[in-house]
Structure formats: C-alpha cells, structure tokens
Length: 212
Image (cartoon, rainbow, N blue to C red; front, side, top):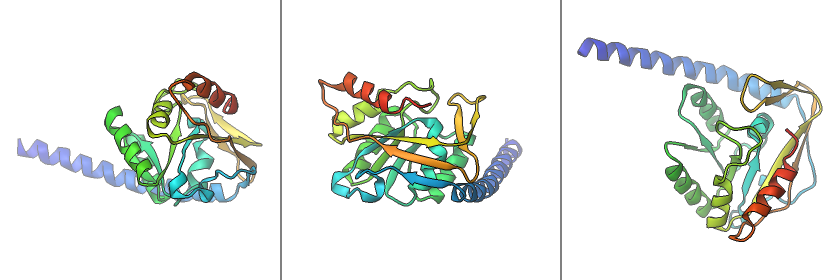
C-alpha cells in the first residue's frame, strides 16, 4: 500500500544520504593518507600521464593494490569497473571524485561493450584482474578477451609498499600502506594479445604481478 511504499522510499533516501556523507569523509581521509605517502614511479614510457589517446592501453593490477593506484592516476581519462552493492556505492563515489569514468557491472556482456566503447573513444582502462570477488591472485579471462578483441595492449601495474597493513579478513588481502611510507609503482612492457598467445600472456602477467 501507499504507506509501506512511502516508508520504503524514506528508508532508501536515508541510506543514500548516509552513504553520501560516509563517502565524503572517507574520500577526504583517503586523500590525506595518500598525500602522506612517498610515491616513486619506476622509469617507464607507459604511465597514464604519458599515453596519447591513439595509443591507449589496458592496465592490469591486483584488486589488493588499488589503494595507491586510484588517487595516483586521477583525472586521466581512465575507465574502471564498479559494482552496485552498498560498499561499492562508496567506492564509485570515491572514483567519481577522482574523475574516473566508472562502468557499473550490471552484466558481463554490457560491461564489456562499455569498456570496448571507452577504448574506441581514446580512454585508458584499468582492471583489477582478480576482481571483483576473487579468488585472490587468479587472473579472470575478461582482460585477455578485451585485449584480444580490441587489439589494445595490456600493461601490468604493480605496487610495492615498504610498510603496509594487510586486511586478511577481506578476500583480496587488501593492502593499505602506512602513512608516510614509500610506495613504488612499476609497469611492465605492453603485452599484445592474439589468438595464439593468450596462455603465454597470462603467464607473463602472473610473473610480473606475483607480489601479493
């Protein structure tokens, strides 16, 4: 009835407001924490700052390493995947704050189509290759399929923090560098995926990303 519908809408409105407030405070604390880190980028010609729209690539990284990567490459025309549950609503708002192009995963097919369209329009793409739910350290086939069908190369991206906290209760053992520590970001050479080298490319990605 109308009363129940009104109550449901009110509860939904309250939840959204609470999530917005939480996202605001989390984002500002997150930005302060990141600003305290000493970020070192190992020599590479393939950092997002240096890539032109006609030579865009797909970046691959572990889900656990996103703490450093998200604020580091903000505002650089990068598309990323997000989910629609309550935790990822906050994550989506953080990514929007950092000016990423977010692609909600309503279905794998729709998400793939959206990512392909972003690549065609000159965007970079960043994918957590063992996300969104694991298992940890296992590369899902989506990134290899996307690279193969679009002809865009994959560049693996890794983060090594000197001192970090690991959240072992999470499926990905999420890594949070301690404030004021050093974090080194390193990139692989671009990896082109063809029909004949999918397995070999996966092995090369695993070799580069092996530090979990």
